[in-house]
Image (cartoon, rainbow, N blue to C red; front, side, top):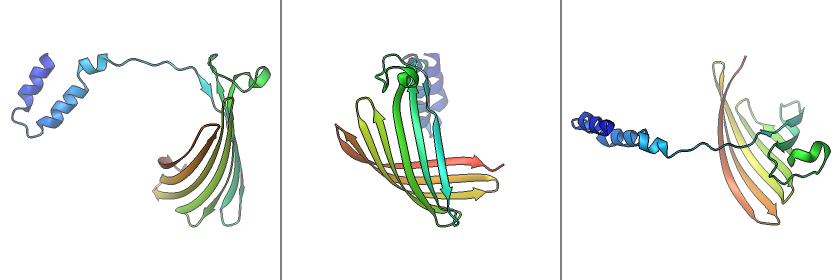
Length: 167
């Protein structure tokens, strides 16, 4: 109540009162009390990638990916041994052609096996990398066609951005 009174008094002469009301509502105690914490079990996702780099720095790659879920309520691929907590196995093969230090174009094919479904990903992507001093900015745009059986097919467009630093 005191916060709302203060907000009204502080914004009477301010031309940005709508924005201040919005942020006041966003951070008010009544809104934050309605939130709750969701606890999820731990997951472990090891991944290994092998690359064969050509003379022009273009490359072929193969990646395998495993998803181990430590939740006992999940349907796992295996019953005993190492696969007891294994939820998903995914393999990916692709080629990325590097045109310059900044631009590359790639194509990839992935297959994922879960207990209840199989998923096939077809992906085409373009990557741009720009450096500013030792900081690198990377952007990637891709189109994926996803085939899940026995259920459905769909496509999606993904935009990614990243920042890293050269040592």
